[in-house]
Length: 364
Ligand SMILES: [Zn+2]
Image (tube, rainbow, N blue to C red; front, side, top):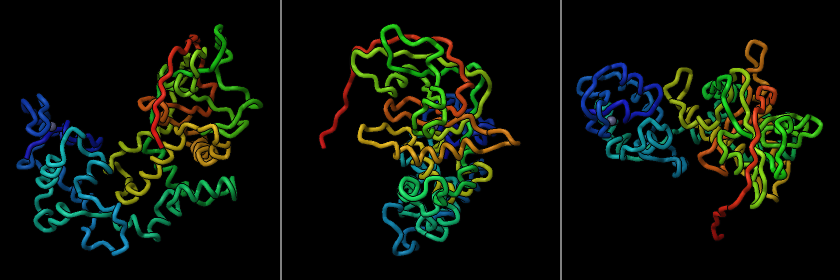
């Protein structure tokens, strides 16, 4: 079985295939030309990675009777949907053939791991979850209820050492000079550059990544996302500021959570499987659009997370300058919440007139 470095998208495995240096005119699996090939008849470098990952799985017939059905999947589904190891252009038959060829010995001794549904037993083990889950009780909703209605500042629902470790897996560097945008609804004349930044502390209202009174600069990566995020109405004028980064910074990139390789150093497969879901939820919550009926209390859970990330130090200095998350209003857009607004300078403002809006609807 031959496949190539393009067939695999995992950040740890891809360089291994590239390092083998076997170039062929095309990849028989994905069709890529001039491909760097891995041939299971010749190479064995990837086998141990997959064998170790397979160790965490139990075939359906051996799982406890109360193991939830929705957590049982075929191995192919786990490798593609949970771990994102393969290029999503490959179909499930390709993935199945690759994994069977890579783990031929394991297949002979335990075919049910490959052919029947499997599960990670710890996902349903309360004792295990208590020690290894970012959310100790394993429920985001419990945490939300607690910080909204019981005790705002001293929750034990989040295992902060785990959150700290995962932040280090999804750190992202932005270089001095990087450009982002911020919009404000304005008059036809627009705002001057000095009025485009975050408001002063005494005027700061609560946001998804900041409490009232704590300044935070919300930026987007492009014009479209900026206009969507401020939810401009038809015929509104919008001032869009261009913000330039004044020094290199590191942010926590919550939307990268799906792309953390399970094979990264210091990462435990089972713990990763559990916590990945929680981090995806946090990304979603920070990016979620507010409805008019939402109260400022709805911001508290994500403010708690943002404040913790802001408090992480490295050699006495703050480690992260902000958080990056997906825009749920403009699906291809990205947003940044910057804890220290002075890191950016607004260099230019352009005024836009909103001429048309598109409404997407769904009958309930
Ligand atoms: Zn390929």
